[in-house]
Length: 427
Figure 1 (tube, rainbow, N blue to C red):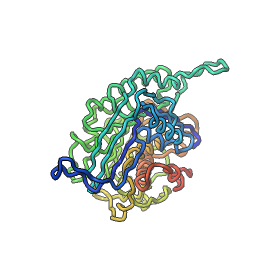
Figure 2: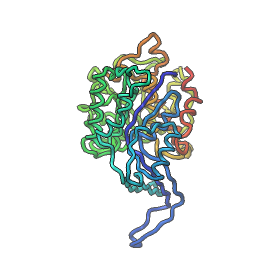
Figure 3: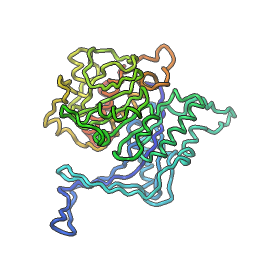
């Protein structure tokens, strides 16, 4: 686990103010209704920033955030919080305007939620993005006078929030071309997160990424069709609707809420593989290299609410109790759960960010770069290149266990230590 991991993530940075109320104001009874909040909480938000703060908890990780930041005390406070969490903010863009982006969330006890967003500062456009990351792409000549080797990859992973589609597309294609020209494209993974339904043109980003993450909201939205078995909308429909967009071999991951989490791949063989079956055999922790034809299994985030066993399962019985504590169900309709399991949930907000962070870490340290999951990315050299590698199923287990440990705590502090303590890195 001593191999370094440098990740650059581009996105937003904002403050979330959460007000918990008994019920929403009733406008039918008064033209100016009022209600009282039982609690108010302020948290730093932003998908990329949050994922980086989780990744930075692991050893040998260097995390860089590219995001616009407002001036004034609130902006300074957020930067200090990130630096304290070991997230490097020197690539952030400071704005002259006072104030920072904010989200005001009112949560009622019946589960209803209302969100008001406010953004007083402009986003980062392509030209500015290029200037911000330039110190990594073209570092200055050191005092020794020896020119830096530009054929060496400046980082191992590049992640984007799929927000401003045209800007993100320009950033992806521009860096892809530069990486190809300098010869380090096969050493870097490009990923993108598609989160908001209805954002026009965002599917165009998918074909330029090595790894794609979809939010539960996106995966559950039109035009996906409901599963005829009565489950959530399925990975099959997600896969089919994006078939033309996903390039061969690209794995994409989706949060399917409290019932399913799936991986699907447009494999090199041209077959659409949806991993939703129990593995037929138990394998040692070695990397699958058969073009994506293994049965990697189905992960159930609902089950991560329960206590998790250690990851050293080897028997067929143990295989039915994965690291997430999931139960394989013969009819593939979900897992068993209990009222007690639901009571273990402390905070579900941020579960998606924990999943993305967990998957990036697991894939980067254990699976990628390398075929068959990212075409063009080569195997790491040396006789020990495959030592300790996980199959994609185990990366999914790692990511979903991160979700389980996140929703049983406030915030994200201590997630990496918790994963280490249950034995994930003993090999």
